[in-house]
Image (cartoon, one colour):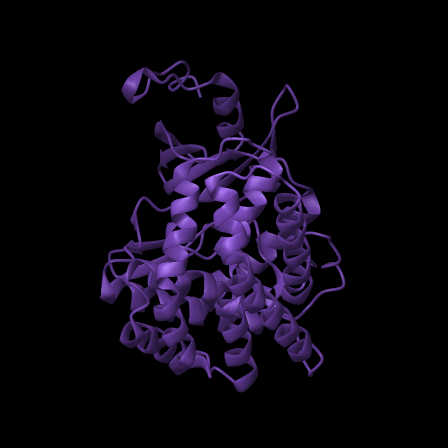
Length: 337
């Protein structure tokens, strides 16, 4: 700690002494520290680590640590495992009460959604992660609200209420902006898809279904491409639910970059299926997830909550892009029927 105290980083950033106080509680010699996107990246005698402030509960942290330990033991998926202090604690407590966690970290770049090969590598790793998470037995200790969240059906139902509320708010306005007129013109088509998706997901949930652990925030930012490995990071939204939601989020982001290329979509689903077979129920779930107009709901919800008389033109443009992509997306959906 003395060696690093007050040291200045690139760009004139100075290491805050309270962070060094947290680092001192770990059995590692720190050679250098630099500011990262979500904490301090530390080069130590035992590899790269990330120091972060922690605002969650200890029970939540213990849950994540247990699951990530099982994933590490499986040996196929490098993850950002927590590191315990010299006192065998998951949390380092500062003198001012600030709580810190230290994690194994990777300095590799994010998966490129434009790279065909990397996208398929990422999908295979998502399948391996799901297979590993599915083998972890449930514990009675998993009773936290952050683990048992909304079901997909409940989420769609809530979003549909929010879209209807926004449409009704706009409808009663006498003088409408360009964005508001755009919403009134496009609402029927998008809302029809939303209602079909909600009804389909509700019917699917009535069948025998077992929730499994999901990453909860599966996008290219959290899949890192290393030399000879593909790491998955940031499990703070991990929960019990439908694993197809993870696959949906990653595939949707990729499809948007590739104009809903059907061949690439087929290859992605095939890559996943070879490791973690896609049952009819899983395919149905994917269909309703892709059918639901999530991005349209986001635009309407942002508008309603901001209550702005002036709304950025780019937001209206986003809705127009959704309309333009509708036909390609419809063709893509046929893969899942």
